[in-house]
Length: 47
Image (cartoon, rainbow, N blue to C red; front, side):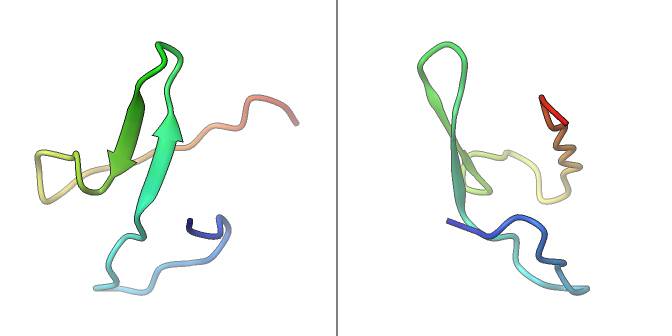
C-alpha cells in the first residue's frame, strides 16, 4: 500500500492501491483504470 502524502515526481508511476468501495466491491488503481491519463481527486471525509 502506498503512503499518502508522498509527492510523485514527473514521469513517476502511480503506486498500486486497492480501495474498498461502498457497495462492497474493491477498486484497484491504476490496474482498473481504462485510460492512460486520469485525474484522481481524493477528498477527506473528516477534518
